Image (cartoon, rainbow, N blue to C red; front, side, top):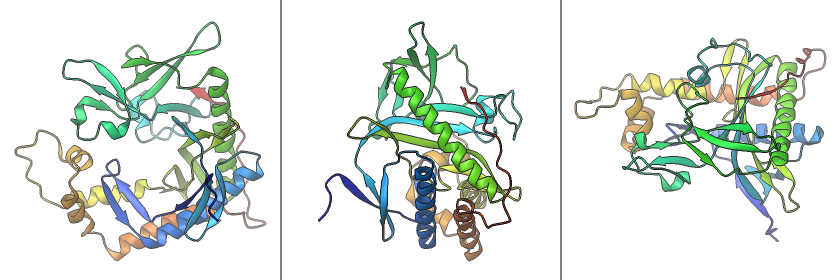
Length: 325
C-alpha cells in the first residue's frame, strides 16, 4: 500500500542547459545519479543530518512529503563561475577570506512591470515575460537588526553585487533562529561532502542545498545531491554538469544562426529563447565520445562519495568558518 506521506521519485538521466530549456537525455546517467543520491544521503544520515530521503526504489528513491522553504543556500569553497561577476575583487580559484562563503537565493523571481514597479512572483508565473524584465533566483542580502532579526533585501543574481542597490525588500521567509539552523545545517552538510570527496582524491568547489520543514516543524535537508548540485574537481579537471554546458556551447558555436533581427548576442539567445528546434540542432551534433565523456563524469561523481579504499585516504581539510554574502 502506498504511504500518502511519501513520494516515489524517479531519477532521470537528463542534462539541462539554458535554465532547463534544453534537455539532453543519457539513460546511463540516471543510474549513476541515483547511486550518488543514495550514497550522499547515507553520508548525511551517518553525520546526524536529517534528510527527506527515507529509502530507495528501482530507478529512484523515496522522499517524505513536506513543506519546501523557498530558499537555496549556495556554499563556495572556491570563487569561480558566476561568483567572479558578483565579487570581482577575487580571482578565479581564490578561496574566500573565511574559508567558505554562503549565499542565500530566493526561489521566487522579481518582475519589473512596464511602469517600473517591481513585484515578486513565483518563477512559474514569469514564464513568457521578457527576460530583461525579470530577475530569477535573486540573491538575498540579510541585514541584521538590533533585535537579532534580519531585514531581507533582494538583489540581482548576476553582475557585481552592491549591497547599497537592492531591487526590493521582502518580508522574511523564516525567522532568525530558523535561518541560523538552515545555515548551520548547510555548513555541516558541505563539510561532510568535502571530507569524503577529499578522502577520495577530489576537491569540492561549490554547491547548493535546499531545505524543507517536516510535519513536526524540524528543518530537513531536501536536496538530492548529484553533480548537478555540486561542482567538484578530480586530478585538476572539473567533474560537474558544467562539462555538459561547455560541450553545448562548443556545439552552438558550430551552428550558423541569422541574428540580423535579434539584438541579443548569440549566447544570450541560445540560453534564453525556449526554442526546442534549436536544441535538436545542437544535440544532433553530440557524438558517442561526448556521451561517454559525460557518463565518465557521473561515474567519477559516484566514486568521490563512495567509501574510500583503505590505504588510499587523504587527510580531509580543516573545517572553515562561513561568511554571509
